[in-house]
Length: 300
Ligand SMILES: [Zn+2]
Image (cartoon, protein in one colour):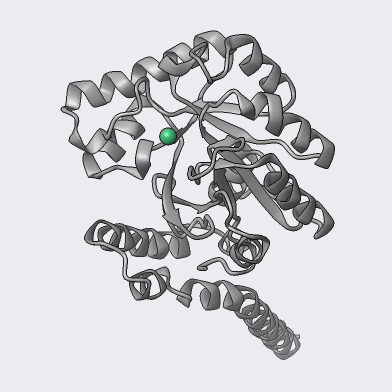
């Protein structure tokens, strides 16, 4: 009786041991891909592109957040793909101004994206997926427009509608209703069409050159004006001229924004923190080859 019980316990322990080994192997196999991904360091790649001192300090912070991600986030989040966030300004013809992309070129780019099966996602979807474990469709990309040119409504909206895409506008709040810029009714209609209207300061200054009080009022006042006019929270921000430093980043965070996009080149990846999100610059006469090259290589 006694020995049978001992044998029984022995067999049971062996069973547990075997189970533990099997589970251990499975867990290891499950974790391995995410480790492999995180070894693909962004530091090397960016520094090999010859970025400035400011970028190398960003790299250090992204290296830090990398190791934090490995500790705290489940492997499926670590495996989220990088997403190209395209950025434009104006869709119009003006010779010699690369910020104004002619409508036919913009149309060709959107047709290319649709034909290749890309699906536009909102900045909010991107944020949730990259930083909070949400999901994205296959071949996701984000379209953004800086400053709030009126042609974003008159020209870009019908083109994007035709292709089933939406976009985000980073609106300079003092430009609203100004000549050549969007009006409140246009902004409201864009929002009703699934577009997001987000923050880009009051006056579009170089924030790193402003004193702390001005930085704060630029961020706070523009956010409040947009929220009051649109009736929903304004959570995302674009640094004017892509200009920022550590103090500016802190002020953006303290104003209550959830994420800020830069003009640093490359696809957006959660290996960079929420305050240093990269974008893909799109400009007049870039050509379809260059456009498609930037959509094929996350570190183009
Ligand atoms: Zn701007």
